[in-house]
Image (cartoon, rainbow, N blue to C red):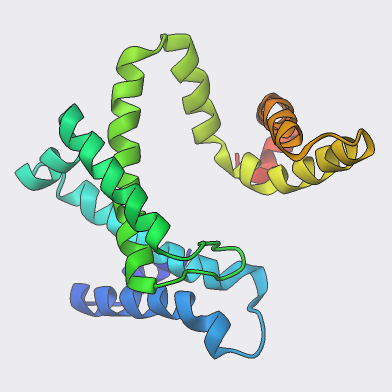
Length: 203
């Protein structure tokens, strides 16, 4: 919504770009600058505006050779970029958009962009290598990822109560939560999208 308002009502492209950069930067800094927390996770939303802009720019320039090259890396180059990205991520502090933790902000943006590039390229190889039925289901989850985003914390907290009651070791507890939560949340997507509940996700 923020991105739509900016691109619809700010007249000049350069002004739009400056405003998006400032809003994204403020989103990274506002937990440090403000004595209170913004409602509706607006600080994370401000940061998200920058990512939406990057996505729009990529889409608009997709026919350019440089973008085409970045989105279709050769396996060896992809491996090298993935290793470098992992090392850079480890150099930064833990990042959590929900709590407003970004570590070194320029490094956060660099790591995020590199991770997106690596993720897109791995996804393209993944689609070629795995059975169609599997990536269709994964794509289905991606299409309705807002359900995962909205419910995953609730499901994880409930499952943690179960593993605590059963006195499971930490590693086994994490494996159990992962194995159980994914199919459960998938069923939640089906339940929401196939019933009148789809109204809550705007369908």
